[in-house]
Length: 336
Length: 234
Figure (tube, helix red, strand yellow):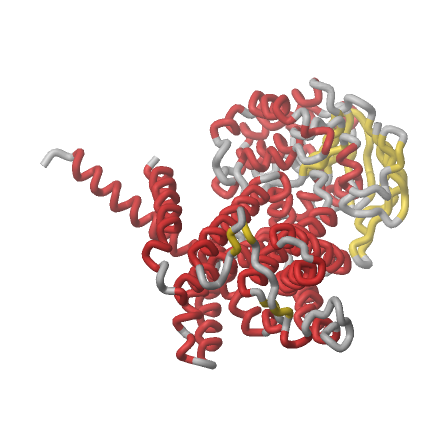
């Protein structure tokens, strides 16, 4: 009872807090920008956790799906005039198709081998993007190493979103975040999610119950890539820019830290991890190159002392709260 | 219903199953006895398609199933229930049962089958939302069998149903299996050595060192000096 009440209260409180955040920070563009980034990376981290934590597939090429989504929607918007709203879906679909194709050779790979094959995407894709730059294609150029610039922003009922006003962007991002986290939650709780967990925890048993291993591995590749791709498309329309730099090793590391710090396979840990690490990463900016050292240390400490990441801490806090509440109640009921 | 012909199986260079043949008719309750590590579990895994035999064939309802995927075999109603503690540890009891109804034909009958499982094992209903890691050995065993029932099986291959259970729980488990048989399923199970299983089985096989060394009714097993000593402990 106490547990459920606490859970619901904290949920409502969290939503309220997210809804009124702009009142506090609406005139500080720097902070608004960071909060919007928290929401976008929250979606990316949660989608990565779907394949890394729930399906336990060491897919280390997840950022390439993010970038593919950004380029697909950006190119379609710039050269064909596709509205960004449809671009978010198109980016997702493009990433899902690539994710599915990457999934095929990965079906028989496990652990480190899978990690190596998928990690190589981080080197292949930027090379391809630079190759397909201005000299190669005039009308469909990726913009080379500069990246694809001037990607149009979406408009709603005549209002065009601009970087001059971040509050509308914030609410759009919040809607985007809530929608995709709900989708991820529903996937985890559906038969599909159960199949991922069954294959992760006890593969032979899952197979003996008729769960088709290959089907679900391909499905998780495609689904998680779709969400990352859609987030990439959104990111590109927000910054009106997507470039190969989004796949740099430090970005990869930071997003990985988000997932690990948030906790593998404990929804919504990865999203919470994304919030905390995005903010920590901003705060660490003055430390320059030491930033990565500090983030690396966080990962090591997390892995050693709290394998379920932030969710371990939250569970501990929850137990403490419960104990405090119980003590209060029992002290009330005992006659003085 | 099930016909296994001259199955050979190797783990690396070690031959685990040697020319194993057996037959199970529809509605029968067949028990395979054998000491630990003599190929019993391997045999069940080969039958349900988790392992592929090196040679030999398996027929189920006049279909050759020895090259089919486990998934296809489950779809045909042949369900394997693995040994104790092979549940999904991070899921609740209800989620484990839902996993049992994974194959297509079972999904429509999920509600009925939930009822059936709760009827056979009332204890499970009270444990519905508990995660599996907190269950006792007996509860886990019941859940494993219950999960196997969720796909409306026609043929159940059960690996050591009484392993690690207290004697009174063993009787409960076998009673439940017998009731499942009376409701129309065919049963093939393997056990290390127990009186209880032989009370329910129509026919008995004994396996030693990967070979079938005995086949017959319960009475024949009782009259066979060797078998009695080895497996019935009399």
